[in-house]
Each structure stands twice: as C-alpha cells, then as structure tokens.
Length: 379
Image 1 (cartoon, rainbow, N blue to C red):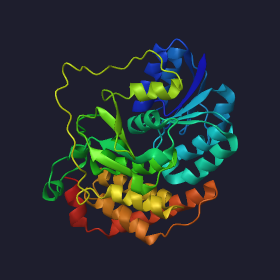
Image 2: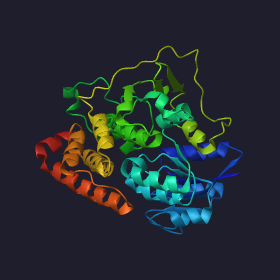
Image 3: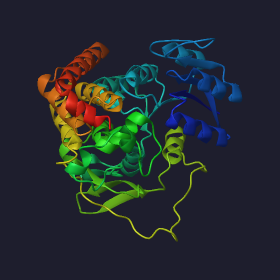
C-alpha cells in the first residue's frame, strides 16, 4: 500500500489527487496540508479517516508548522504530492527530498525559484522527482531513458488561454473576470491568470530546463487550443514523438503517484471517432513576452528565477485587485528583472532574499503606474 501525503489538498490538484487515490486499491492518503481552507481540509480528512493534517493558518485541532517537516515525519509517506501554490512550495519540496522521500511535483515554483537547491539535494539523497504538470508528465514519459544528446527540442503545448487571437488593442481593457474564463482547464485563480499571460508556460519552460537538463535554446512552446497533445520531443534525426490524452489532470497525477507502473486509470481516454482536428499555431511573443523572459532567466541563472516568480506573484495580485493593467503584468516582471541582477543561490536564505527583493521592487514598479491606468484595469 503506497502512502501519500498531499500538500495543497483543497486546491484543484489536491482534490483530484484524492479522487485518484480513492479509486486506487493500492494507495492510501495518510496526511493533508492546506493554506487557509481548514474546514474543507478537515472534511477531506474526516471522510477518509486521515489522522495527520496541517494548515498554514492553524486553527482548531489542526497543527501548524512552517516547513511541514513535522507532518512528513508524523505520517511517514512513501511519496509527497506537492500541490501548493507559489514560492511557499519550495521548503517542503526540499524537506521531502532531504528525507529521501520521492516528490510528485505540481508546484512549479520549487524549480523556478529554487532549481539550484532542488538539484543539489537530489544529487545528495538520490530522491526521485516526478512531474505532475501535464506538459512535464508528457516529457517525462517521452524522455525517460533517452540520451539527451539525441534530443533536438522539447516542445511544450499551451492552450493559448482566454485571450488567444485577441489583438493588443483588444487586451487593453480586460479585467480579472475575463482572464479567469479559461476555455479548457479548471484551475485556481493565480494559475488561470498566468495561463492568460502565458506566464504559466514561461514557468513551465524554466521547470523543463531543471527537470530534463536542457538549455533554453532546446525548449520551445506552441499554442494548441484543444489541449490533447501535451508535449512533443523532436529528435536530431527529424523524428518527432508526442504524448496525447484528454485535458484531464487525473492522468498525470496518477502517473506521478504510480510511476514506474501504469495502473488502470480513472481518467477518460481519447474518443478517436469524435476527434476531427488538432490545431497548432506559433506563440505571439510580441503580445505575450513571458516565454522570452523565461529563457532570459534560464540563461542568467542564480536568483533570476526567484525574482521572476516573486515579481509575477505580486503583479498578478495587483491585477486581481484592479491596481494593475493586464498588459502591465509582464512589463512589471521585466522591469524587476532589470533592477535586480542575478546573484548566486547556495541556500534557502538566498532564495528567500531574492524573493523579498523581487516583491519589493515589483510593488514599487506597480505603484509608479498612473491611477488612471490602474483604474482601467479594474473594469
């Protein structure tokens, strides 16, 4: 019986992970952690007889721990599913890997902000890291056991988000409600807005660099609105192999939890009789510059990833609050990167320092935007 600890159990990934585990005869959830939705987590625990739970906000009989290490020690998982949102997911990723516990990673920021640290602890302990994002799950399946010298490019697909095909002028007046109307995926607010700016894909490009040891020049993205092809691998001889499945997170969650096996799944399969076409189009980097910023971060190294992630989190919060225009989100991130040259990252303290500085500078850049433009973003 595989024992699973879920961090971020009340979010979209956490809820679907519980459904996957409930349907599996050989898996058991032994612990839960959440941010502030304590009542929802307690309901999850109560319905399944889960004894160990922790919340960032604390409350009632729920334990509170800063790094979740105590929770890991208490429930002794065979694998940790990290579905936390934001840079807060890095410390528990490091804590699990440091204990030699495999991590099913749905927290992009662990690698975006702390890739150097994650790589170092994995090298020291040998702990496995299996990606949960559908694009990285696809690449993981396509690249397993493949000599990287044979790979020309890894190509991640992007749905294009709710603003695919809109002109720059049409994007000027969009507000949070528009950005949250994703055409394909049901995700949390922050990830959905990141999808609208293509920052989500940018973070995934950085994540792919760390997961698959590829330079920025060999990682690309393409828009694919059906979200059936999740990634391609193009080989040096010209052959291209893709991974396809319906747009459901249950499959990559299950694959991460059951790897290296393929268990009978609770996910839908492709209805080939109904599938009539698959569309692809290039990313418009002029309207959506986030992927270019990601490649800049990969090439810069050091603290650049933590700064980008921090600035983006602050900018997204400001957009949701109506104090920043949609089109200014990547501009704020770029200006923050310009203002904070990359520094070496050797400790968690280095990452946290870069995160603080990135947030502070991003807030300054947001404050410089005129009230009139900020007000326009709230419409």
